Length: 356
Image 1 (cartoon, rainbow, N blue to C red):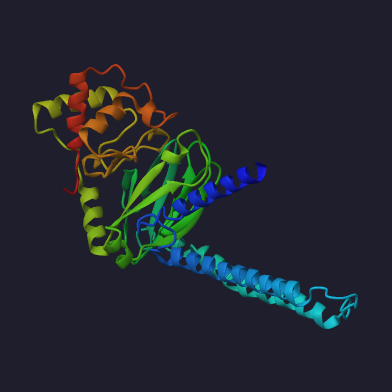
Image 2 (cartoon, helix red, strand yellow; image 1 turned 90 degrees about the vertical axis):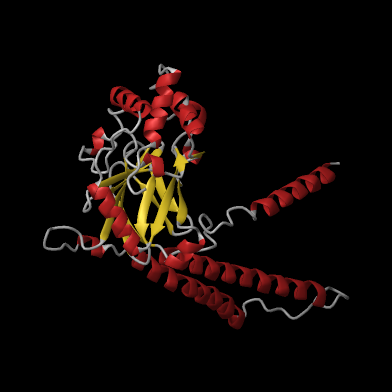
């Protein structure tokens, strides 16, 4: 019975492994479909290490089977003893060293290339970085993206140009998080006491295959809603990115067009403005930016990074965010809003657009 139970468990785990192997196969999320130079380097290293490991397993298995079947004892004759053979000792010492070198050389080369962020320090005549730099700030449980040389701050959605290196400064406001865009590369910690730096490049062809949208995640256990700490990455052509950044730089506070939106703006001014901003040019210090920037909230593809973007989900989120993201800092802030106020606030937030 014990053996039967073990076989049942083995079968169950085998089926689960088969099912899970089909997950994350989408081009906007899968590490096995690299969409940039960094992701491609990491993918090539994974393939190289897998080939070496599988090759070692195959060779050892073949030798094992040969020994088992060819040298089975058929009589009392003692076979030739090879203990202390210098030839064999040289062979089984040299081969692992060669395999390690084959794996180590490209790994070390890639590591130094990925760590090269010297372009971030090059400044133009105005003192701005010649490269595109994004300051990433991780919070419980949302992301902020600041473009210091463009004077733009966004929340929950990172916008980047394709076929160009984008440099990142990573930090956290509260606890350790980790910045990761699986299809493009990365996965680097965001700490509270130091800034980590690295770069990514977004391939235009792969971005088109993914519909111009990639998924980003927190890859460090940070609390009860760690698995829900997602963000979206919009990959635009370089011309489209320039248009987007110009529109964001010139955006003004949007005025309501209906009576309900006007009422919603009044509710926002009384309840939300202390934490949220509604213009991309958020000049407040980081300590005052307690919640995501909502300047282009009406254009987003997700609410709170996880819900479909519609009015019903927005109302549910505002009224009871704890249900959707346990442990978030917004819980209880808007519980006293009436249904009319909630409807008006929803209409106003959905009207906030910059590029549409």
